[in-house]
Length: 512
Image (cartoon, rainbow, N blue to C red; front, side, top):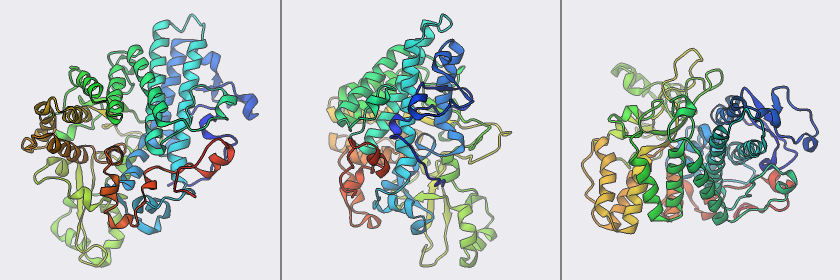
């Protein structure tokens, strides 16, 4: 992992620049940071002077979310990995030797740990600033070359991006500063807004996005790489679920499920392909930069070589304790399943057979002949620019919407058969029988189980699920690696340098 030190003059949620790959936008804050505009940027007035230039601004934001100049951040892999270790999904291969990572595994995160700021807080606030700049730039533009229809759609995209980032900020940190403009003097004084206010803004942005965004994928040239009305609706369904607004969660999820643009793929191996019929929104790689045609999930969560590709003789040699230490990093991923995750699958669940790989280990004290499992949802690691891209990075997909609706229906208790039917749509695809759950309590437990085996290694779902359902202490507090357990670890710490730069910020409890 890159551990280069970062020095910010101002809090990261008001850093005045956009991280764009090809065409960037200077944000008019030269007088604040007292440096010249980068050669690769153009002034905001020019950036929003035509449909093409304004569109390039939004395209650049998506590129920064996925490619980030070849580094991993929350939006291209970190949100799957680190919350996965905070939950009961992953163990890091480096163990105690990888000090910062192991703090997530043991839930002993220190405020000095660089990961929360480097991969989450700072990148998300930079993208929020980019979205705010785009919203303001399009509102201020009077250019006849930027037509009203384009301005509306791009404003909707920017509001969607802002809501998307705030959703993850509030679930990682709790109360967070709510910056809705590029006004430096206002942002520098921001204290943490209550979660309820952040969620209120998320809903407002997503409703605006619903009204403004296209109904189809025309903005992405037919590819599912730009959020549309249905991406906003899908995220809104999730937000309602987290807020325990069951009726609206069911209604929003039903809208998405009922749209003919989406359907569950018949084969599990097709789910994460680019432009999959299950994809609601995906992020596209920049083939000129890492991870090129692959994904960070593919390089970190999946093994380089598969145990099943070895002949019996080679398998025996691999399990020889003298060779295992040298060969294991190639056959076991950087982050592999805990026993909780590996044992969560029912017998014959094809999600474990197709979406997970495994490796055998030697019969020695460290491994005890265990079978080690890992995620295999993404099969390409860091390829080359010349190879074709076969998998885009899945952000929102239809499978989650079935689980949202199932949970909402079970919570209200008014359509238990419908909740079971939603679970069965995923279970039957996975090669399992229909759920035996019929009562409200049984269905809620079944939903939690299906979420664990359907959404594993995706966007921190497991950790967020344990927290929002009140099961975190019960589940994580029982894990030996996380003893002694402290519920304060359910929120990440704000970096000390952020608090020093903004006296209105206060640290999360438990981080001293």
